[in-house]
Length: 429
Ligand code: GLA
Image (tube, rainbow, N blue to C red; front, side):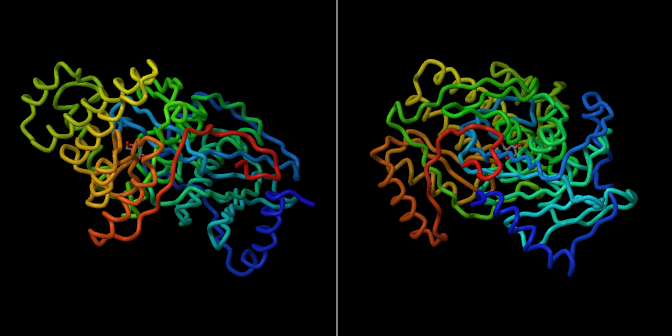
């Protein structure tokens, strides 16, 4: 019997025949850059002509993420401490049938394939946003000199969308790793990271900071990933929840979450403006000991609050990393909670649903709790003794019902591996 992914693949191909002949999204151009062609790849991709054989499918799976601590610090060149999740996206890349000059992208979660011709590269095509995460990688590679052949790509994700768990990073990282493998590009860790980040920033136009892609590519089971977002050096830090009798309980508040809208960009611009006024390359360069002085030098209260959040958040990441390195996992709770308070009161990116969840988790015995991700909704994490998890879930549900919010979704999370090749025939989970 054919294995599952082959069936998925065959099913999608068969199912899409009608769609392709009836109303395919056929696009004949490549110019999609929202802010001019990205420059980052020129140095590491020499011109390549690649030949691949039809039928040798390459399958990679890349995960979504939870950020343990370090929010809105990545685009300030600071520190973050996320971990990869079990949920993820599986990308299947195959060479297109002979005679095809197109890139065909299908998603198990989308009704229609998107077909793009490799020739005719003149005007900006209008493709659905989800497909830009896939096509963006192809466009970016082409732009940097890779002669990408006609391909059939299928993606299938079980990361909830709009929950702040980086379904987009899972998508782009699974595709990038599969392309690198299928086309034998030999991209190293830095090049893969640059490719995935540039797809999101330049092809999709979301001004995100790179944390999500880094952990989706490099996460390790049983560990959080300590990332220096200036050098992009990373180090796995032990996060052995089971050994300490602890659980990370995730509440998806289902409050609408969208960080490519104005608020995320406004925070980013505000931080950059504050750094400029303070005469530093990025807010990472304001030392904790100089914070009061820096705040005195700023007139704008909004910018002062941004600076206070970012500088103290970097310190919280460093303190949590120290505790984890010393095997003192149960002691990280206060730093997680302080991070939430800073996001709520200084950075002002929380909403009533996430604040309600955090309060309920504390009342139910959480050692610490905070919103995770870009903000304005999405998920909350609580660090709980194993025996309190059931009651904490009930407490969150009850608090939501009392407040008249919709039913939240609750699940537990533990650090899983980052992007990995999976044999055709499995989804890798
Ligand atoms: C989103 C972005 C990340 C990061 C977080 C906030 O998830 O994609 O780059 O900025 O928000 O920490």
